[in-house]
Image (spheres, rainbow, N blue to C red):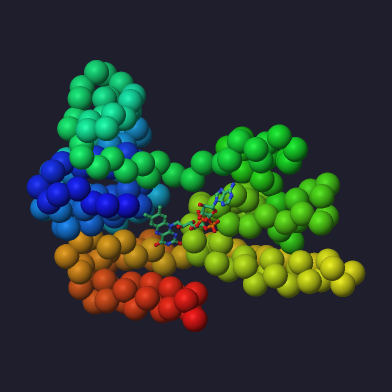
Length: 223
Ligand SMILES: Cc1cc2nc3c(=O)[nH]c(=O)nc-3n(C[C@H](O)[C@H](O)[C@H](O)COP(=O)(O)OP(=O)(O)OC[C@H]3O[C@@H](n4cnc5c(N)ncnc54)[C@H](O)[C@@H]3O)c2cc1C
């Protein structure tokens, strides 16, 4: 993806934590107007009130325009048109409106309301013992969780073991996802917000912590 020239406006569609993080990063990098558009009544609905307040303050401080209760009707090459007919100039429009299930999954597989493949504790698809699903495309019926990389990553070793076990005729083991997980949201300008077990903190040291974790993870993948 190529970023537009600095100074040109951008729009981010989807005011979840990821959308807010990207809006702040764009604002920091581009020194340009950024509009964050959210269909629901508030942004970052998964955060605690304190976490959300800190995030809203950061968006406000960065000059990001936040539109809640607002739907995008159409995306053009250099603008977006809202459902109510308003038009917003945008040299770069990013859709970060949450994971969406691929249509083909629902053709032959058991899927839930949102169209994600249902799996049991072993990550096997019910009625298809040789078929496993993990990550964002899967929906754990035994322990529903939000779509987050932390679950995708932790499912991976269980998935690998269970594929081998199935091949060798052994029993599969269960995946027990954790209840809560550390969320670190970059606020632009090497500053971050963290939320864990209902506690929200912010600071430059949290950004350094996130940077170290992310670089370590990517480094392991490229080795
Ligand atoms: C901006 C942003 C920030 C985030 N930050 C965090 C965070 O801090 N912590 C966290 O835990 N989670 C975070 N998430 C969520 C996390 O990225 C996802 O939950 C995670 O990537 C899911 O992993 P996955 O492998 O299931 O799917 P993905 O990472 O989406 O990978 C699926 C891959 O499959 C490819 N693909 C799709 N269809 C096909 C096809 N038909 N053929 C071939 N390839 C195909 C896609 O192109 C993609 O590369 C963030 C998400 C976003 C968007």
